[in-house]
Length: 399
Image (cartoon, rainbow, N blue to C red):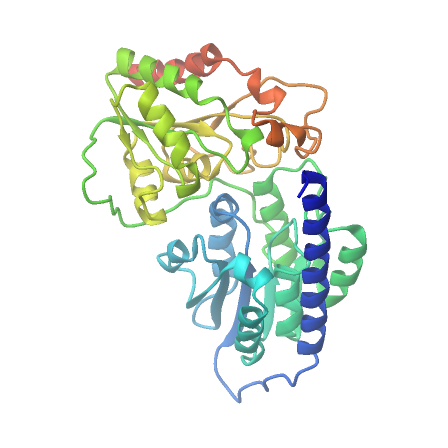
C-alpha cells in the first residue's frame, strides 16, 4: 500500500477510535455515582498522565500542594502515567497510586471501561488535574468520569487538543485556573496553579527528588559522566557522533568513565555510541528501571544529553546537567526560571537561536521522516557544549 494511502487509513482509524472513546465516556458519565461516605478524610484524586520530565518538574509544587492539603485531613490518590507510577509510589505524598497505561486506554475499550468503573465506583470529594497542556480523551476524560463535586484544572493551552475540544472539556470542570503567557516556564506555571488553589504566597523553586539509591546489579562505574543520547523524537536528538566526541574529551581531561543510559526504544543509540567509543563505556540503555536510572544519575559527576527527562531528574538531584537543545519548545521546560533562589546547579541548555524558535516542532516535522535532527539543534557545536562543561568543572575545582 502506498505511503499516502497508509496515512489516510491511519487517520480514518484514529478518528473512529476517537469517536468510539468519546461516545463510551459520554455514556459512562451518565452512570450512577458513588454516594459520599458518612465520615472520614476528604478524598482527593490527582490526575497526572504526562511524561517523566513533567512529573519531576511538578515536585516543587507537589510539596506545597501536600502542605495545602495536610495528610491528616486529606487522602491523596494519584492517577499516574504507568511509565513513572513506581517512582511516584516511593514519594511520601500519595496514599495510593493508580497506574494508567496510556496506549491501552486509547486502543483497548475494555481496559478503558474497567478503569472508568474503578474511578466511578469511588467517591471523590475533589479532582485536581494540574497538567497545563490538557488532553481531551486522557486527563480531561478522567476528570469527567469521576464527576466529583469540585473539579479543578488549568485553563491550559492548545498544544494537545483543538479549540473545539477544549470548549467541550472546559465544561467538565467546576473551576479552571487561568494560565499564564504562552511562553511561561513550566515551574512558573505550576506555581501559578498552586496560588490559584489557595497557596497565595507560593513561589517557584527547584524541584527535588529524595529517593533510596538502587543501582542495577552489575553496575561498576565509580567516577563517571553519564550520557543520555536519546530524546522524545528524532528531530530533538543531537547527532550521536557529537556525544562521542564529548565523551572522549571528558575522559581525556577529567579521567571520568563513560556511562550510557536511555529507554529500550533508544537501544540503537546506545549501541552506536558504545561502538564510537570503541567499547570503552558501560551501556545501560534499555536495561534499567526508572528507579535504577535515577540512582545512576545521582551518582554521576555530570549528565550530558538532549532536552529530555534525564536532564530534569539530574537537576532535581543536584547533579550538574548540560543539554543540546533546539527551539521547538524553548523557554517552556528549559532554561529554568525560579522565583526562589537555589544553591543547586541549574541545568545548562546549549542552543543556537533561530527566528523560528518556539515553533512547537511543527516547522521541522519533515525532519522526522528524513531521519535528521532539527536545523536549530544541528547548529549546536561540540565546542560550545564542551566549553560550558569545562567551565563548570574548573569552577568546581576552585571551590
